[in-house]
Length: 165
Length: 436
Image 1: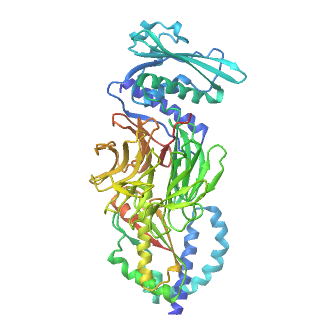
Image 2 (image 1 turned 120 degrees about the vertical axis):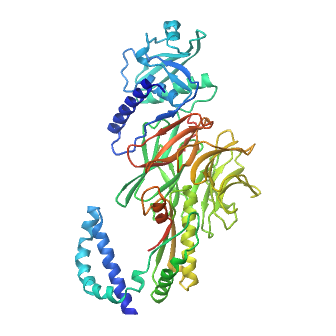
Image 3 (image 1 turned 180 degrees about the vertical axis):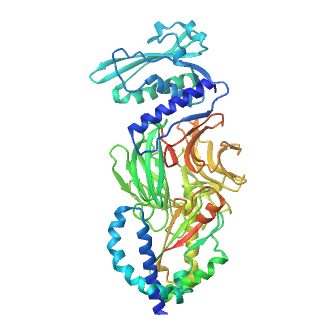
């Protein structure tokens, strides 16, 4: 268990490094370029085995949870992943941030409140599973940070979400 | 609108675009396009101001013309059709203007009065009645030509319509431009016609909910620059700013009281969004609502004793009225399953709000006396209504394609215009109070 968490942590780091590497900001690229050399070698070594034997572990559990319009009820399909996160946070406590979001419809401040309500719904679920509330920070971005762009049902569905970070 | 007018406004739009692009590169210039005017507009001629030896960068008469046309209540006579450009009432041949179908004429002249100061003397003439309605003098520096023009528009508009002009007012709004996943948010202030845009705040993190102080000298807004939402106030002249809140959870929807001494706002530090009152002198917060539902978007009644706000305590977002002294609440809206973001017209009676009809979000007006709800807009995804201080026009944010733009509609829905932006999303307009 412990080993696989280290592995998943490392592969998460690897992912993070990959993501920073993709950043379009040249200044950021320069700042992180040394990090990439230092860590990618290490994570690269363990990464292949991590993918093989830890696919069911927390690293692959969804970190984005979706909601219906003007609703903050967790969907049944979110439960499995949230249970995994709850177990992993109890076994290996770390600070997490729950970012609540809304689609662009409706008013901005109401959507701020709605995003917070959604993030709180995820927080309450995790706390009920035994996660310490002190580990969880909740922040709402309302409709200010879309994940999908466009004014259509597909984009809206992707934007009504809570991201676990 | 005639073909000629359309052609002309396109040319003007392009010119204005060019000018403003030169003036402030990289900003989201707003250019006004009138889409629907009054059925029976008043025909008015604005004779070019006789400048004498004065050289000014701005064409005052053209600005007055654009102001009056944008109000939707006026149709202006083409300058090239005019037979003469009289600089004073005594030089006017009424017959010339009657032939052009003008009901009113504005004639004026400019002269230097002091070092660096210039005076415009202008007259409003009733062409049909062949008489001078008023003569007025305004003065300023060469940098204030746009201010002088808007002031002339205000006087002319008020004289003819009986309604105080709001051309000298300003707009605050937020723009967002995105490159990849990186946003840049800007809080701007511009003249009511979109000109002279000035940057108030720029941030990589969201900026929201600009709200004017009652004296028009400060803005309150929400900024995420600390990584979390916080309410700030900023003086527009000195650019001095102060962070007012730093609570866990939501810090949002600031609304300055009519007397300027308090601010209504939303905090969720108690677990869910509640409306609070901040005393700006003492810095003390007092809680006004107590409900597990969402309570947000407070706005003041002119009496300073009541607030209107959005709450979903009844199951869907609706507008409620709150008595600040007794904390008693009363639900106001019942028609439709989404009524939010109340914005009161200066008459204290006409309430604009975001209203959902079937699946579309529009701006509606709600008469607090009769309870009648009227949908004002025909666009989609409409939000953030704000009423001009003279109660004539309502500005709001909407979508054109995938881009956020500002649009305006008169409170009787007879007049419409849009302010397309050349770059980025424009949103959350806030109309200033009267500034003089």
